[in-house]
Structures are given as C-alpha cells and as structure tokens.
Amino acid sequence: VRSGCLAERIGRAIRLTPGEEQALQRIEEQQRSLRRGSVIRREHGRSADLVVVQEGWLFSFVLLDDGSRQILRIHLPGDLAGSMEETTGTSALAALTDVRISQIGRAELGRLFADHPRLAAMLFTIAQDEQAALMLRMASLGRTSARARVAALLIDTLDRLRSDGVCADLSFLFPLTQEEIGDATGLTAVHVNRMLRVLAENGMIERTNATLLIRDEHRLRQMARQASRRGRIDLGWLPEARG
Amino acid sequence: VRSGCLAERIGRAIRLTPGEEQALQRIEEQQRSLRRGSVIRREHGRSADLVVVQEGWLFSFVLLDDGSRQILRIHLPGDLAGSMEETTGTSALAALTDVRISQIGRAELGRLFADHPRLAAMLFTIAQDEQAALMLRMASLGRTSARARVAALLIDTLDRLRSDGVCADLSFLFPLTQEEIGDATGLTAVHVNRMLRVLAENGMIERTNATLLIRDEHRLRQMARQASRRGRIDLGWLPEARG
DNA sequence: CGATTTTTTGACAGTATTCAACGGGGGTGG
DNA sequence: CCACCCCCGTTGAATACTGTCAAAAAATCG
Image (cartoon, rainbow over all chains, first blue to last red; front, side):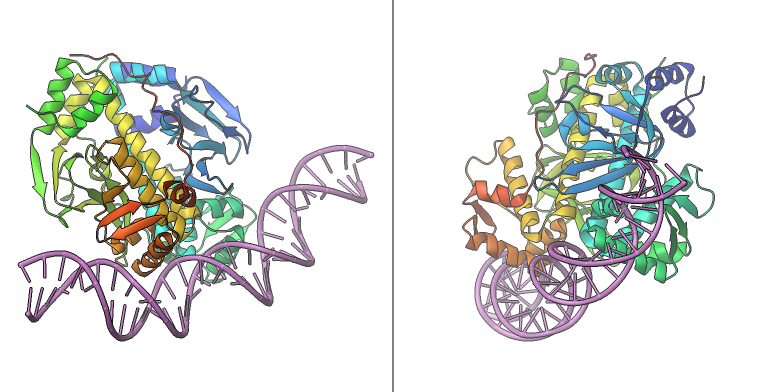
C-alpha cells in the first residue's frame, strides 16, 4: 500500500513508528477527486477539518461582500490545506487544477491528538509553517509594489515545487489565470498582465501558454523583495512517540 | 493564586480538570515585564515558542530588506502571540505599550502535548483562530481601499476589546501612532492621517490624543468591508481530558 | 522648558484601476 | 469537420488613488 502525501512529508521530517504510520495511513486512505474550478464549501459547520492535497493544486480564498476575492494561499501536493477554514468558518477552498485530496474529519483529528501526541505536534508545526507563509505573503501585499508581488508569487511557487523535488529545472506548469494571479496578489487582471510583460521584457521570465520559465532567478528573487525565512523548523520540542 | 490570562480564556471555553488547571498555571507563572518599544527577538533559535499576553498590547511584524515594516497582528491580553515566530523564525514581537507576558518554552510545550491532549487541541484551535484573523486581514490588505483598511483595524480592535469585556462603551485607548497604523494597514503615515480625518469628518469616529471614540459603529463597520466570520469555533472534536 | 517625536497640511509625482476594444484559443454543438 | 461562443490575454487612454517631499503645528518626554 502506497503512503499518502502527508505521511510522506512527515516521514521525511521524523522517523515514524509503525503505529503512527498506520494512523496516518488510515487518515489518508479515503480520497476524493475534484475537477478544476470545484469549490469545497463548508456546509454550515458540518464538514472536514483538514484537507490534505494528494495531487494537483488548490487555493484557499476569502470573498468580500462586494464580490471581490482574495486568494490566501496556493496549496501544492503534501500541503495541509483548510487547516482552519472549517474550525473557524473563514475561508473556502477551490481547485486550481483537477485534484485528488483526502479529508480528515473532526473525530479522527481528536483521536489523533489523544493517541499520537507526536503526530499532533507535527500537525501543529505544519500549521505554524503555513501561518508563517501567510505572514510573508501579508508583508508582500502590504509593503511591496505590484511588480514585486507578482515576482514573489512566482518565486515562492518555484521554491515550493523545488522542495518537493517535483521541479528539476526552471520551467514548470503554472495553471493560474491572470485573474487568479491578481486575486492572489491583490491586483487587477489588467495590471497583472502589464507586470508579467515587464518581467518578461526584462528577461526574468518567459511565458508560453501555461508554462513558465524562470530565466533569471536571481534578479526575479531580488525584485520579489521577500522577507527572508532563515533556518529550518525546530522539531526538538516534539514529545515522545506513543503507540 | 490568580490564574493567568490563557487559563482564563481556555477556562471560558471548556471546563478544565484540576490537572489541566495546574498544568496551565505552571506554564503561566513565570512572567516578564517589558517597556513600550521593546522587541522580543528570536536569538538564533534559542527562545520561547509561545508568548501569552497577560497585560498590555503587543504586535508581531516582519521587516523587509528595504527597512519597511509590516505589522501582522496586534495582540491583546489573553492572546497567544508568537505562536509560530519561534518555530519558523519568520517574524518578531514588539511591545506597543508596557506589557507583562509569559513565555512557554519548547520543552514545556512538548510536555503539554504528551500529558494533556485536550489542552494541546485547545492551543491548536487558538492558533487556528489567530490564523483566521490573519486571513481576514490579508483580504483587507489585498482587496480594500485605504479608508476601508483603517476602518477595519479600528472595528477589529473594538470587537476584540469587547469580547474580553474590557471595553464597555465605545471609547477606548488606542496606543498606535499613525506610523504604526500605517505599518499595520500597508499605508504611509501621511495617508493614514488623511483617512482618519475622513472618518472623523464623516462623524464615524472622534479622536483626542490616544483615545478613540466610535461615533457611528454601523457605518464604520460598513466602510471596513470585512469578510464575515460567521459562527462560533467548533470544539466538538476535542479529545477527552487526561490527568 | 527644550528636544524629540508625532500629527497635520499642501503640492506634486507615481502607481494602479477603470473602461473599452480587440485578438486568440479551446471547447461545444451542429 | 466547421462555426460559433466564451473566456482569457493584450493593449491604450483616461482617471482615481496613494505615495513622496517638505514644512509647520502640536503633543510628549525628560
């Protein structure tokens, strides 16, 4: 039996006990497929707490009363998406591409906290990592120019694809429409188009359809003005494994 | 012995067992005082994981390479600040007023996850709630006008002060300088000044020194264009208390 | 009281949005 | 297989919004 993306990701960080491995397997075994554009709504409080992306890209977003949308985060395979949407009812998830996900129900989550404290602590850590990413994106939105925000989105995506070993070279499929890029960066689609053109004209990127080629990573990164995120995540505090 | 703000807050949500109460008390008993303007840095990975605000206001922020600052979140008494700063090394904390805090070290946190799964789940939930707030602020930064962002900051602060019962009426002390408001909303101090004037001229607020009076809460809230945050937090999934 | 920070205001520059129009590509139904 | 349509991308011009620079008044601190 193949292990799920979450088990794989946690397994990369710590050495799982057989009991832990089994618990994760049980959680991830039920998977669901969704087509691009599908929205995973919270149905008035009766749905899953956590979503694990197995394959494809998701994004979480908030709708404002005037209908405008803010994309909060793009979720790649192995990510814990919707880590809080369902407990607090703030945002929703939608599929950027065709996706395969597994959902962790509330009851299962409670059992995990009771039976496997170390896994619970790992989930806590992963959620914290997501939050850190959110914070960096917030700084990008609040304090950088349109060019920088678009560049930051591309660089961030590159880095995350890389860390999964999915993307060997500097060319990858980027399935966001310019409208979606705008919703992620807080810009209009029109202005996103202009900024992409600027990046292309300066030789930093090259675009053909949905494929993106990073031509000058260093300058693109410089333009992104990202606050640095030094160091590995500290896992020294995790409790002993049980079971 | 008086209980700390965190114990009080958790105790408001669930009925604590004596063991849990004692564990929280042990965590919060060591308190530290800081003067306005002090910065709590992570010292290359050797500091506390979590900070509980006991008294006064804090804020967490990110610095960009050009020196500009984005304030991510204002923390009021009872809040769990720095929930991830220290595990991921992204942001730092600073004191908006003179403050009293307690710090939860990594070892203590690990012990808590091992011994008190229900408290661990509560911390997880509180952190998720913080993240939800972050998401709403992100939508505010990305998708609303300068006026709306300033209004949203004020309304959010009002709501949070209220939920703690600190602020009976619509007038309260607001210790942020306009520069700090700007760093929180992604604006320049000059423009913050203009927006505050607009709000005051429209009869929504009144300012005298550091005291803020909300004159027309309804219209101010409307101007803030906040994405709604329906419903209470779901706690039905928490595991059994142990100890 | 003097020094420093914060607030306030005006004029101007720069950035992003809005509005409008057009071209291209992919999918659908005939 | 083709025509059509709709969505997406592209571009230009005008407008609105926010930032920058500079200077002075007010408040705060010691």
